[in-house]
Length: 569
Image (cartoon, rainbow, N blue to C red; front, side, top):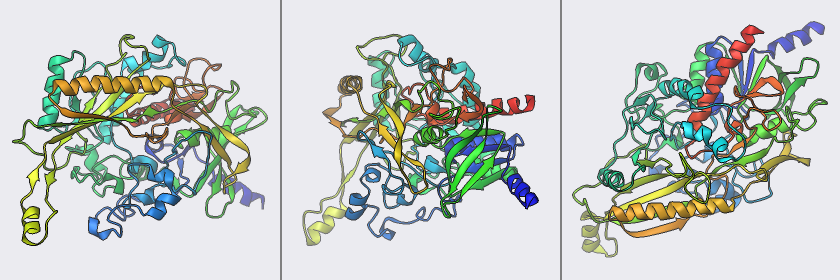
């Protein structure tokens, strides 16, 4: 019997364990396995194999029972999921339904989740912008939260490392506020988007309209062909899973790459309960897992653990990793774990019309989505009554108008002889939020989910300064719209609840001092150095950029450090 027990432990022992198979977890697994470490990749959801498990990817609209829309019954059963723009009949199978993993909303919060191999990398908006030096310096300069323990120079080579493998379409725009990267050819702006760009350049110093940078293969390179990926087909059906691998996902890219090394063990249906800690050595020894099929508790062991379960689940796992040494959560002596959770404010939109350039129209699809306006507010110095600023998307399009008001021959002629609308222009805000201690998550003392893990309480909300940034967005965008000759300008509050930006960050923030932060400059827990956190939970502040590229770069950088540490040990 003793030999059986020893063999069982040996079978459950690896060099490294990664919790979570999304964008950052996939990158951690790729880097660890490439460096020769036998790695266990844990995923709480089901397996999704690239191409094979994309059931809707090639269906026509008429092949969906409800033509792509969600039923009234589903909207009643899943109000949280239905508030997400990407939750449709063609993608619903990649989303967590409301009753599948409950949580306690102390304040209204939409926790959008994708529990499957690949996580939300199958669903993300694929927008990829680097942070600038000004973003990493912001908290120290402006005196909010704590100083980032890294600067742009620390992460820049890792941005490049990730970009070359992922494939990022973009232009070299030469902006200090939004550094250039390793780009494939960018997607061009259309005639009105380009008109807006020229107007802004002419009339507004320091403001820029650029082609949005996105994780799409506009022109695949040998490294992408080697991954089995080919050129983006501009279908814009990305939320279904892309059979071409035209956009980056863990399923199409990093996980298959890691599997080719022979060093990866992928285990779906595995809820991470907690990180195991040995008080004698002062190190983590592995991860306790709940098998979602059998509900069996299983301990896996490793020399190093990467926690990449997505921001709120990472907070949950670490808070639940209790011991005599850490009764409030692993590494949580200062009591800050779960606090200073932040997000992006996406509540504002502004639309208008344009009756110029009617000799042009929009055919085809742009997977980048159009233009991007980098933040120009409070970047290099304080200019307003509020801290930090906002970025924005911008696009323009025309639509065919068909008259269906008649019957018979008149209806036939109305449908056959369409006319084109004026240009419609649109934008949505992506504003930074300032991390605040009262925006936090914690574990329920009594209630547990079906896997025996405490329910998570979420108390996260907007603040007065968020509305100040929104008003500034309305004011500045209106003046730019007017300068471009746009008319019928309309502002809109879309009522989006916190969380529906799907950019939650923080709770296990990086910093210099163990008294005021949880992670050091290498993404290690200050008080348990063989545990790394490189998903959104590690973020000290939010900036305005889409954050996934930064998570992936931090993951690659942290793995490099972890492997060097293991070799020294």
